[in-house]
Length: 224
Ligand SMILES: [Zn+2]
Image 1: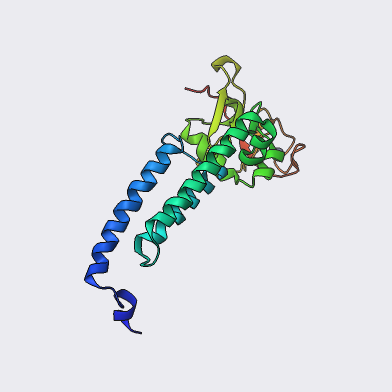
Image 2: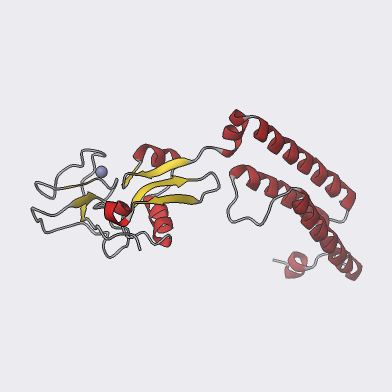
């Protein structure tokens, strides 16, 4: 293994200086083009926006250090990408069907304090991801949530039950989200898979909603 070849090879001092100049130019160009795209600071990207960023990024990369790629070529690539991006956003504004195709639709994740199983399967999200997201919104258990919507940018929008309407629901924090082992007649139990909440005959009962077995003691504290 030739370390000199891996790290330096035929890089001259002149070309090192050229790389500094090329990077600075591309950095400024990327900033300008992101401004032109009209996007604000971004928390999360939709798939469509991510594609634009990836295209801009790969157009910016090569001219930073590949000797025979002039900056004008990258500039043209970036112009084309931004024009396409602007045209697509315009089309999406005009046509709901195109918007749905490119951005996807918001999906209900929670309704009436229970997980919407079909939509979760569609999204290929794990429970853990939703639970983590909801915990970050200070949700102690699903009985506090009237509905939760997964937006196309990956954020959760949440509607809460008012304190007096709070239901019994599935706890989301690890110390409470545990399989119940001691059966009590008058207690509410929540299905650990879908959040279905009910009284039980015994703890090996199959959930009538999702066919899973596994129950946690329900909570009913109101959302703070
Ligand atoms: Zn269930």
